[in-house]
Every structure is written in C-alpha cells, then in structure tokens.
Image 1 (cartoon, rainbow, N blue to C red):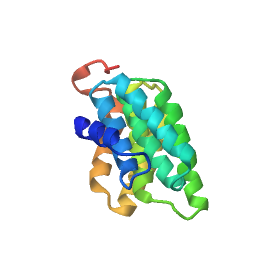
Image 2 (cartoon, helix red, strand yellow):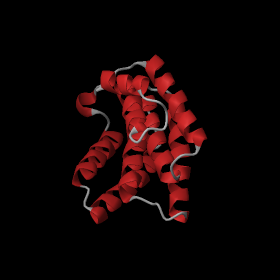
Image 3 (cartoon, rainbow, N blue to C red):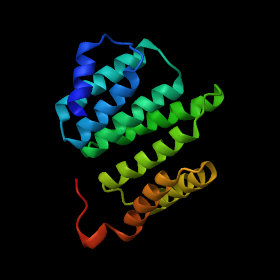
Length: 168
C-alpha cells in the first residue's frame, strides 16, 4: 500500500479526484513503516493541498487526522498539535453543515492512539475522550471503532498488556 500511494502521488498532478484519500493513506502508511522522510514529504503535500483551499473543513480535518496518525505512530510530539488543528476544522464543519459522525469518531480514536503512543499520563482526559467516542459509536452504530476505543481505554487505565512498557 505504501508503494502504491507513493507511485500514485508521483505520477499524478496535485488536485486529482482521489488525492485526499491517497495523501491520508500515504501519511498513515509512512508512520506505520517508520518512514519519517516519507511522512515529512506527505506533510508538505497535505499542507499544499490545504493551502490550495480545495474541499471543505471536514476534508481538511480528514487529511490532518491521517497526518496526525502517522506522526503518532512515529512518536512525534507534533502529532497532538496536528490533531488539535484537525479538531478545530472538525468543529468548524458543524457551522458549515458538513459534519460527519464517522470523521468525529475517527478523530477521537486517532487522538487516543496518539496519547497512548506519546505516553500521556492524564487518565482523566483519556477517559473523557474515550467516553465521548463510545457514546458516538453507540449512537451511530460503529461497532469496530467502539471495540478499538474500548481497547485504547483499557490500555490507558490498566497499562499495556503483560506489563510491558509502552513503545515510543
């Protein structure tokens, strides 16, 4: 998937129909593969796409959620700032009637992952955020995300399974 995203981004001019999805996937893949150089490249391309102003605030939040997810996978502290920016845009989508419950749940899940990856110690914030995500999942019927959020909440409260230290 990583190589396919890179090829698609290299072969197509900016602004194509699927650019946002490919940019988001490329950032997530770069994080999982611990490819910091490719993640920086993706960050630049996402910022350029946002600067072009194509799409709405929800689309921008979607791109930044993927970037923040990639950053968190690499343990980069900037992940939380990126996710804060995505949250501001998600909140703005309410005012423009482009809100998506799915995107809200994804953003909550990704923030919980980032907090875990960065070793956050504020369990109160984590529990509050997780409860909000669980309520949304229940209301909207997102079972898979509900399971992910429950696992992230358990890990935050109980610590990682087997008493192993959290990875960086």
